[in-house]
Image (cartoon, rainbow over all chains, first blue to last red; front, side, top):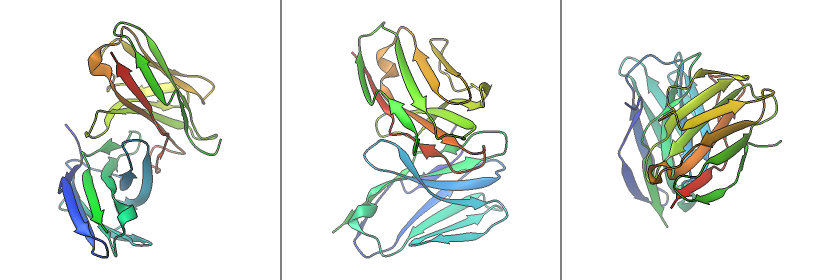
Length: 110
Length: 113
């Protein structure tokens, strides 16, 4: 079964609003990563947060990690139409590979 | 190279034929991964290489699927006797270490008719 599960499955917002996506996972991790995918092709790495970190920022992205609840959230502030994409969380453990969730489809309307 | 390169970008094949998909990772990346993605779905893990060895091939769906990596670089995923359910986008990624961020290629869209 998938390790990460994103919530919601789909999100539609207006340009300028903030978008929040959540991810839950089941087992121990070393790190959690978020990726973006446009048009069903290659994924682009956005941000990596380690298991001993609680929050991380990169530009308009803010990621939180709560290992006690086995959950993470991705916040995109001041969204733009170009942010329209699918967003995936992925969990990693040393010596293994990333396990991806099913993704959240974000639509930002101009 | 500058990124992960996959070829071909699109492949249409007849049911029962064999196909080979190629992945050229970023130079120096020791870890290489194959995933596949059906339309509108998440990523399904296939196989993971560390150097030339495959510590985890648990995701290969059947013995029709095999993969190899030579020289710690290029990898080939082979699907024998293709079936319609093999139709998907096959994604390759590489990373410096197995707990680093991945760099993905643009994928190979395989259509079995």
